[in-house]
Length: 347
Image 1 (cartoon, rainbow, N blue to C red):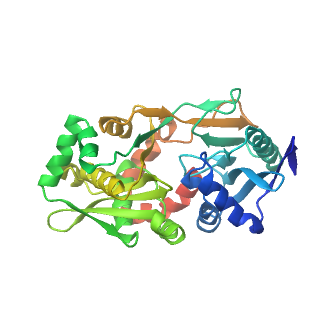
Image 2: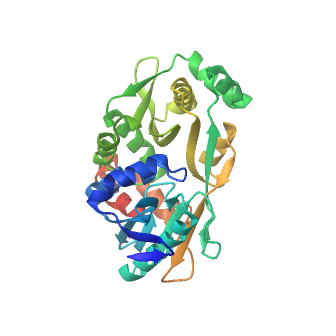
Image 3: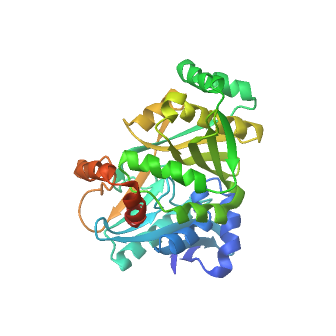
């Protein structure tokens, strides 16, 4: 056990599960990725070892820090909060708890012999730790009236949405993730990125239920041409995984997809639309700005145990360019079979 003043940090026990979930539901710092269901995903789907830390002041929970240990021949040995998530790090209602949890995590990383500890925060917490200045997030309030949200979209992008509506596209909420997976896997292949497994998406739906939702866009003939899997947390919606067919571009189906998600969120009283993470100077970055969202820096902070530079395990790294080009040329059946084994180590 590690202590800072009267704040004590200890590993999460099974008896603490309800307390963890209750704290995350109420803590302003917490995100969907702090929910305990992710521990099941990491352990059972990805087969990674987890280290979930809880801070208490007396009997009161004042902070949590979920950590996942990644081991990979290609990408090394690391401790991350959280892999496959845009947000992570400490969720806390107590400044001392943040310091105590960071110290506990740094000590754990040293004991495990990892090469680095990575905390994916929305705010800077360790000014003297190395940082990754690659990603931004896009968050914007959802206005209370549907038409007000339409008018808040910049003119050129709004014209694309109206064009899609005129083309008689429609949207439905799917009960499962099977149809979405086909769109997602096709999209990943075209971008040269290993896909997650079909079982991963089924597990997300099984574990998070209605808080994991699939919206599918249909062409006038009823063909599924675009889809988005979104997470709901408190009064926020986070479109997280997307997929489409090549024909979606000419139909403006992707513009329609996000409009339909925004419209439905407005109608159910959601207050925040979180467009998620993008790398600077990419097409995804530009697309979100065109919707009237302003980028907000993400603070990915590192404790380095080996080496003196922040790891660059992302597609922006030039050394992966050839691998991406080769991956695009492989048959779909090959990438769907091999891809999840690679993807589980990317984090």
